[in-house]
Image 1 (cartoon, rainbow, N blue to C red):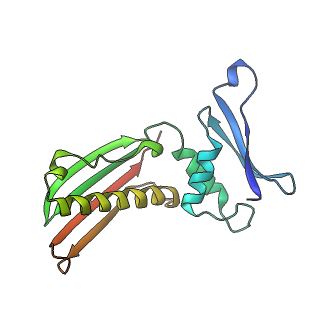
Image 2 (image 1 turned 45 degrees about the vertical axis):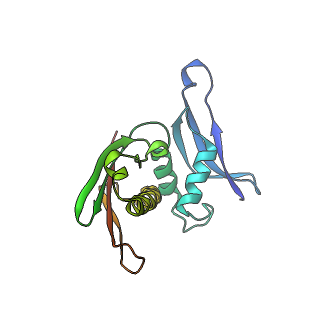
Length: 180
């Protein structure tokens, strides 16, 4: 990677809980782009991981739209519970499980071993867990890449008969990035 994030954690007593970040090219030692105001929990490693997970391009490229990508990541980072998400699990059209959570990006996850999910057959339980995990992962990528912060809906459906088990499992997820 030929670019990095610089972090200025502030000076003096009054600035210890806030800092600034920006981009710089580490091959030419040149800063570029906007400066963002962040709190003390900012983690450069987490920023890089989220940038890579979203598949964003090199911010030095003119067409990268990196300012809005960086703002999106900075908004989702940290420990503010600013995402509200709901997951619904259906098996053969019947609602089996529904949960709404308000979490931060790093901790947003749904509990796979809820009693109603565990009470399904072993095959259904395994498939539900796999689909729930897929939906969560897709949601986290779309939270990073979708600039529209209004509620988004996604579903994963698996229907199969040739496997010796009649799967008809549907996972629905919707989420919203909440305003401050």
